[in-house]
Length: 222
Image 1 (tube, rainbow, N blue to C red):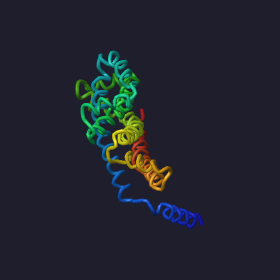
Image 2: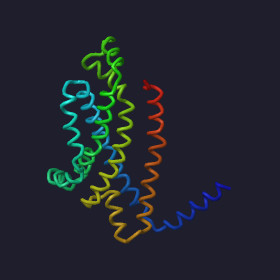
Image 3: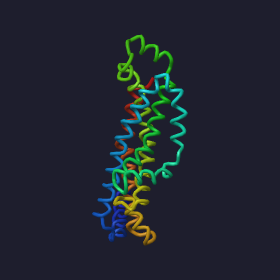
Image 4: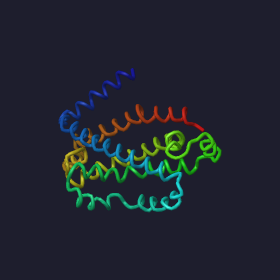
């Protein structure tokens, strides 16, 4: 019975959204997703690397307040600077998104390192985890759950950053698609686009983040 109801609802939805140009919507979503994925990759490498290098060094206490101040600068207040240096380009949107995504990852890893149990630190030292070996064999596995949680928060912020930048700059992508669709009010295109993004976020959470979090809890639980 539930299958029949679901099929009816699905057919009704497709009937209502029959006027949507799905090729245009799909292209817009792919552009935005590409920018977000690229920005996340850069932010992941930079954020985790900086945190791993700084987190166990004497500079941690000095740089932590600096990072905190930089994190609290409203991201969209910086977009004129990104436009000035990089113009109205896809690269500008990616780099702008990096400036938003990087902070949750960086602070999650820093917090994980700073809150590590003393006996774990001592054990790592005793077993020869010093210098760069300390990062590879001790800090990176220790920080893996934090990298995941920071990534989940960062990706959520990244969607907002990329879509918002596309709306502001009028560059092709999902943000620009929604901007044009909203000019007609609550249109079929606007509803379809919003629904498509919700589906993508749901699928990513269920198929990517949830299994990774479960695996990290199993493998890296203290």
